[in-house]
Length: 636
Image (cartoon, rainbow, N blue to C red; front, side, top):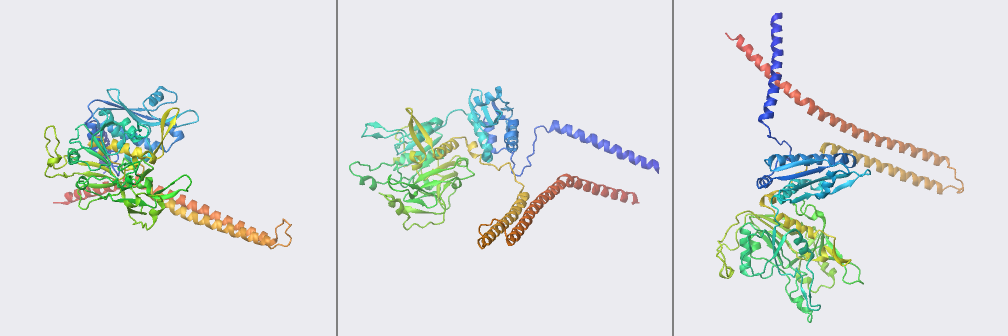
């Protein structure tokens, strides 16, 4: 009997040793055979690269060096809340480098104060988030270089752009892989490059928006009667198209069919449109049409737009002065949009704070449209359309509110349209739409790739007075920006001029996930604490009022001594105050107890429950096996 028991014990110990050896062997084999294999179990698959990012990596021809600078010690002292996000960024960059197949070389650098690494960070264009008392600068950014000495950088990672982390990194890589400046083709009926002034005999200044575009892109001006858009044009920017000839409309249509991107500005009443202007006849301009449209292309793209209506908005109207002597007047046709009026999930508007527009129209998706219509800018709900005729010779903006009734609808002032589109000319170019010269071009009835078009129903947002002030400082013109109009245009052009893979990368979910149950407990406790605090304040006011009343009823006003009645009232208040404060402390203590209890439950679930489940499953398996053996042994 004893020998049998010892034999079983030996078998049990030997089995455990064999399992341990087998476990170590599996671990060693997995380290070798499964190297590079990863499984993303995060809720929103934060570490899984999108198809667009993978395509950007596949398009890399030559190696790219990425330098991730993070001042760990400085962050721990100055901004400890940055640490989790920095870990998220580093792990994401490591995933990028792993998936690049050796095309991206990641260098993680912790620059020490007054070191060469810190000097190198500044040289690469990174910015210190803040500096401590000891001169420690906190760097948290990314720089990249390519084989041709090209450079690009994210000066500093911002927590409010966490959902666009993948886009920002992929954009930096794309800029290094394709360093050529994108070409922006411009068709405009407005004098954006300066207008001849007959009074001075000189050309006017170029609009600051064009100066900004020329710094970032290669700008090419196209005529309004062009018959074909060159293939090297990445984005076609159309501003206030008025009565474009058929061949130009057809050229724009086929540009979209070939995969070209469009940034279009239309307007029901453009303030920069000088049509009909005549110094000898002030009424001439008022009688002219200052609206623009792009029919039949807008219809083919699935967009509804009425050039006869201007959006008025009581909630976003700005105050203006008609003259220096009059007080400011609310102008519901000149709008100041806030961050909440912009698309939070689109990279071109997510980081903007204010956009100013004037006499803007509205856009909507046509019923049955096959394209995807996504609003970028919207009015408030206190808005309604106003006939543009009411803005002709408008002297008193307050009259626009006469009879104005908000509809409760948030009107779309700018939108992105994506998806497959069909040509507005299904039968091909008409006789008057064919280019006069050059080889014949094959007609495309459908877009070869998904279209990407941004339409803004206002041209005035490009004008200086709505977003920038230009002043002369020591003989140089200095621009002072007070709104994000220029940033909006630059963001859109930057986004549209990227590769189709880059454009497809949209905002991802954020890394930080709050403890929802804990937050709910805190909110409940805060409600209780607030009610107790209000009770204490009410008690205080009532007692002070009672003491004041008692004091006024005293006969000897000169005496500073309290009466017995006042002393009793004061003692009662002190006692009540102590009671309420005790309840406040108990409420706070109960909150801590609830949170600690929840923490204990989570620890039990995470630490004890999983092994317990495994143990129970093991016992079940062992019991089943024993039963099978017993059945076999009892069988004849």
